[in-house]
Amino acid sequence: MNKAELIDAIASESKLTKADSARALTAFVSATTKALKKGDRVALVGFGSFSISKRAARTGRNPQTGKAIKISAKKVAKFKAGAELSKTVNK
Image (cartoon, rainbow, N blue to C red; front, top):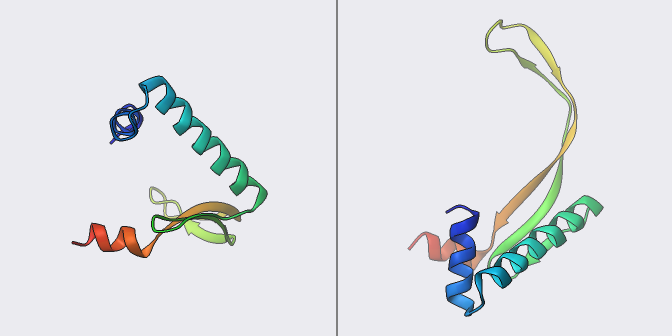
């Protein structure tokens, strides 16, 4: 499902216009991004939670040359599915 399909699905489920659904989706993404950038966790009960995890620096290999390269430390966004979502997906 791409963004346009998600907006269509939100519009049909919520009885909102497509324009309102697009604004709602954009607002959700923006608010979630801002919270994660501050280091906060965004939890949606039953659906899941978004959080930031720190990935340590490590040594990797260039697959073309086999030469060792340094991969710097960074923060990564993570999503952990909630129990209700996991249960529904696995039915």
